[in-house]
Image (cartoon, rainbow, N blue to C red; front, side, top):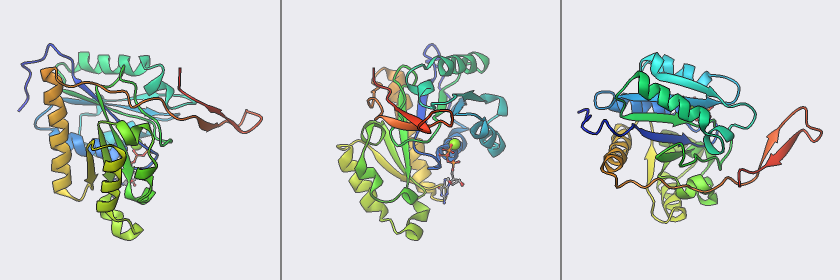
Length: 242
Ligand SMILES: Nc1nc2c(ncn2[C@@H]2O[C@H](COP(=O)(O)OP(=O)(O)OP(=O)(O)O)[C@@H](O)[C@H]2O)c(=O)[nH]1
Ligand SMILES: [Mg+2]
């Protein structure tokens, strides 16, 4: 049931980060579909040069197309969710004004780096998405998103038998790396896992509305390399630390 008794508070802003192709857009589509009857939702995508994620989500048909907006982030996809969040904040405020009252704004990060995380200046909570195809070891390798995002999703569990990954072990390793913070195995083909994801989102929303939820900063990204044809070395390394 929509609960707009707290409409004086803005919508919960939930970030979705993780490496390329782990299923961030699909997961957002799944969350929208699972909560369509309960919540008023909008989505912001961050892509480097395109609005491909936004187009994918519009074509998924889980949300009115005008509720999905794309921010084009330019060369370093992390700047827009980490250092200069202005464009994303403006997009969120616009969506909230246009479709008031919204309950939830989902923000997809451009995925290309294992350590990209959202600034708490932009999102109230964030989930980090890995997939089993990335291998069972990746959760143990850590990084700020894996270690300290509000939720770690181990996605595409349906593929585990094909890629030789033991999902229970991967989830256990991730739980250790996260010192007990929540980890959820998810597949779009597993209704129970989608129900658990839905419950997690509703739980964060409840806690956000009650004032009990504390946004955390998973911490700055590790230094990383960006390809750049115009650069003499073919690219450059940079950090998002201040
Ligand atoms: N088998 C399986 N495939 C999935 C699942 N979820 C997503 N995929 C597939 O994984 C691929 C990548 O999914 P996306 O949702 O586009 O991933 P993404 O993280 O948004 O990708 P980028 O935005 O390019 O970083 C697509 O081919 C999806 O169909 C799942 O639960 N199971
Ligand atoms: Mg995507």
